[in-house]
Length: 366
Image 1 (cartoon, rainbow, N blue to C red):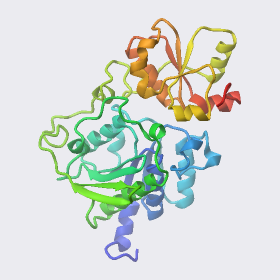
Image 2 (cartoon, helix red, strand yellow; image 1 turned 30 degrees about the vertical axis):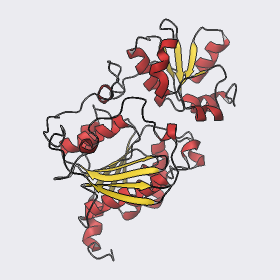
Image 3 (cartoon, rainbow, N blue to C red; image 1 turned 135 degrees about the vertical axis):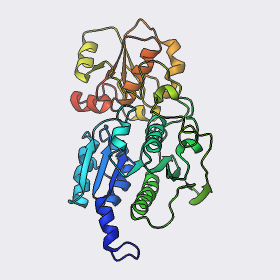
């Protein structure tokens, strides 16, 4: 309140503001912490994942005692400890083309803390359609980017990246790794931009892309302009949210973007079926470095990014059971398998996290 240009009126603006953070992971952690501490009145969080010990070097909303808990539960406890007066609205869902407009429409500022292109384009297009500022951040290994998209006169994410890369070409943080402090840098910048937007002070990153090279510790800002041919904010031919998995090149009714339910089995059922000699293949779609820490000995490692090329080695008539860390990538893999003509495919609910929790062993840890 002592800051020039803020004062009581500015603090009241923060109190009245409604901010939606998509993702309670590496970027969402510092962003949510600083916004809660700043006195933002209402913070919405969208996440449907659980806390994994391998995430803790970058996801500071959560601690070792939270491993296996829903991220939203852990985030709630931590944020209320920072500011017991913040109103938290927890959305334990994946952001989809079916719910994005409803969720985005409830808030004043949207913060993109995702690590996949499907959701990133979904956030962008929903923000453009509803005229909500999109505070963007992305990180990978040692590099980060930040900007503010979908403002009244500024560009949107599609102006910078009209189309996503083909499926499997780009890894996310879980697959490719990230320097743990880098999401802290980018997330803090996202929180800064959000506060400036709410207070209507300073100059935001709208129309600029801030790029950080953490290895060289270099910050570079480049100007970006609205593309008049952009279907979202230029020609505005995009009038509704599309099937983003199909847009990214994975066609078929079993779309990741719609997040339709897939067949699942529990770890207990998987173990029982193995014990009685049922005929099926167990496919692990995690990355090799994840499997080095622990794996099920009788599984076959096929990282998700290589699944399409590996399908020729699979038998469409054979039952396939897919496992990953928490059940997200395995569900994605099952949808891709179904769309490619493998009808007998199921995902292990809760992935390796639940397997270790319920079975008490890896049956062949490395």
